[in-house]
Image (cartoon, rainbow, N blue to C red; front, side):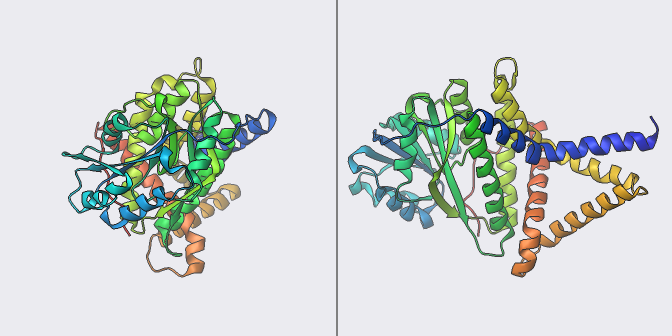
Length: 384
């Protein structure tokens, strides 16, 4: 093949690599869910529930979060609330002590080790048949726990995730982009639920059967590994759009970038840890969803420069000239979207390209850290 033909092949392969996880895979899942839908048999169900809230230096928002859980539309005598302070250095512990008379328990970790270590310790104190996970700044709708638990009336369901929304200023790229990304993810989760199980959950509003919980190594991401363990146990992981929660968004792009790097790195490590589920001979549906929804998305950053460079090599052809102009336009909008203080009109035009650029930069950094054997077990409160 001559140079032009090679460039064309590489270009279209790169375009496919970019589009497949974001557009083609969702279309395939939507089709499969229409042809052979799997339903969730929900009904009223009120077992003992334990809410676990890991926290690190969250004194500013923790009281509201605990109050929110205490005021849930769920039988009070069947609700246990445990806050795990991951060696907080502010007044987080004192805030929790203020709720002791209302039955809220505090577990204080003397050394900081991250969310997985916090949950692994807290689960030993959990009495509930169902374990609900909440971030320290996650505020649930009043009926969120009740609706989540209704899903466990179906014996096939082992894990439930809900609908998380980020509270953000109207012109925040980090917050607005995060909400756009979450809306897309939730749509995809709805599709995946119809074919069996979702890949990836909203860690700020989710729940698991107590007997399906498995201790997770400290450096791995519980929001990813626990659902995979459930799938490996032949139970379903489902998304329930009726379950609403909201939390404060990052408004600082640097904080959002750091969070995305951490999530992607730990997800790549999680894929390695749960690699048995990538075997299409033993887990055909799960392997397809894992590769499509996670692995190829995290590797799409490698296809972006390939698509751009080979497009420039082919720019003499009218079709490729138009495609190159489109790429330049998208990247220009993305770069403009990184600037603070944009007008609402410009923000609406640039927020998705800018957030897509930021996430792929994060995926690139995460991939490098993964190859270097680095880890990011601990977290920081959201900035903004």
